Image (cartoon, rainbow over all chains, first blue to last red; front, side, top):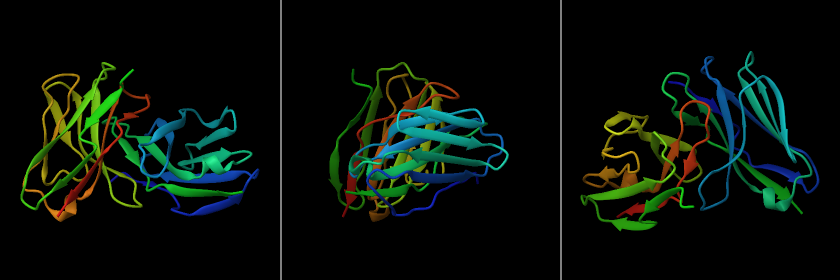
Length: 111
Length: 112
């Protein structure tokens, strides 16, 4: 059973701080990695995707991928109360293209 | 710009009843998925499809059935509803490898 693991949180950070969210995965052959944000009662929406080792930046968000360690992270700089949500890590299965989701990390940004 | 459309948004079923959750996408995506999300949990894959006429089981298929007769539609059938099927159901679609999955707005189902 291929797995994606995340710390469920809640992770609490003060407004303006950096929030760091982490994810590990079991399928060494995975090539595509996604971070989704989900507000309570809403559907997941894509924040970032990353395919290559290293960092990928988009505004206040940075995704980091280390395939050797099977580790993906999301950094949120200058965190805002509106960033308070659950962040889901997803890995696309290398054989079937299914998306395997972690249980999500709940982030609270304190004003 | 509809994307992925799910109906209904809410439904209450009695134990033993059946229903079909509808999902339609207008992005010409080959891949479609059904997930369920229990409170405080991540998304668990029920069934998925890589194209019209092709479906396969995910992690939690028991109690559900699907069909895919067209590229656009991917309905999920619940037979003999049970309280354990109380959940939020999300349909999603995508292009092949390396593309994001687009989600519908979800169906909140309660079985009483």
